[in-house]
Image (tube, rainbow, N blue to C red):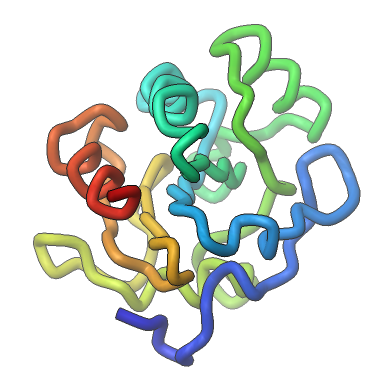
Length: 167
């Protein structure tokens, strides 16, 4: 399925966490799991599972893209440096991270404008519900799956969706 405006989420410009461009075009032809993340959330331990997925499938053309967001009860209040240090020191995160953005509302980042029109298995589309909502972008650059924040990174349905894109 293509995004609502027919173009890939990987066509947008977004900054990298520690400056410069995140250059999403480098992920063309890869499967990418985009996740809005936060350091002070009850779901923050999902960083462990996300890093495991990244390590398990990176050589097969897969990456995680962490997108910090502070819109949910202020659970990502830190600076870029603080976020990077927390993710590295606490969870050993090696996957790429973008600048902190808004995922909902009138200042929603264009990346999320292209993602939120896609519905999950329960039919939810539109606004991001909480930290750690996940979108799988296929090798062709289109959104192929959406998973709720409560879906663990190593959940059977999420792993199956990733493997289907890497087959």
